[in-house]
Amino acid sequence: MFLGEFEGEYKFIYPDPPLNLVSVDPSGSPKDYLKDVRNVAQEKGIDSIYEHIKEVANIRNKMLYASDNAIPSVENINEMLQRHIGATLLIHMMYLFVIQHPKQNLVEECLTVFIKIQDQIESKET
Image (cartoon, rainbow, N blue to C red; front, side, top):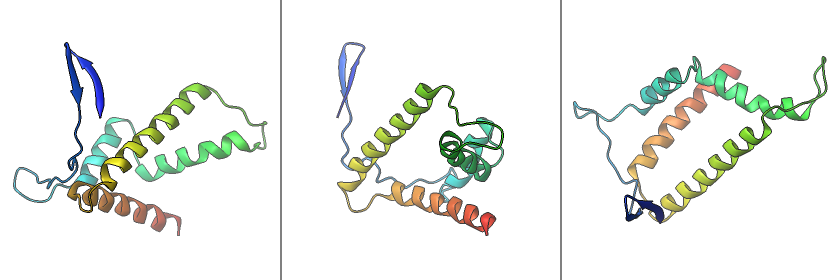
């Protein structure tokens, strides 16, 4: 996949397979991606991943439905649309990288973290 021209050279990425990594920490133990997700969230000012996901999911409702105080309104619609369009393109690109190969360790590790986060969200709701 062509990325562009940088410093006079054409740059490409070759997904062959791009995500078949075995990630370990400096001690040789499997990398704890959930810890990394929490660290990134804290750096972005997100205290609770659960609350952040709940808040982002509620943006749609705020756009579509009136509240007791006002009719729906949206500010910075272009910014919101660009974020969703970018995320959609990224998801499609990752899918095309992953679908080519039956086993990719990094994908499995990331899915494990995603499932852990989902389990925590579901347990808080029930």
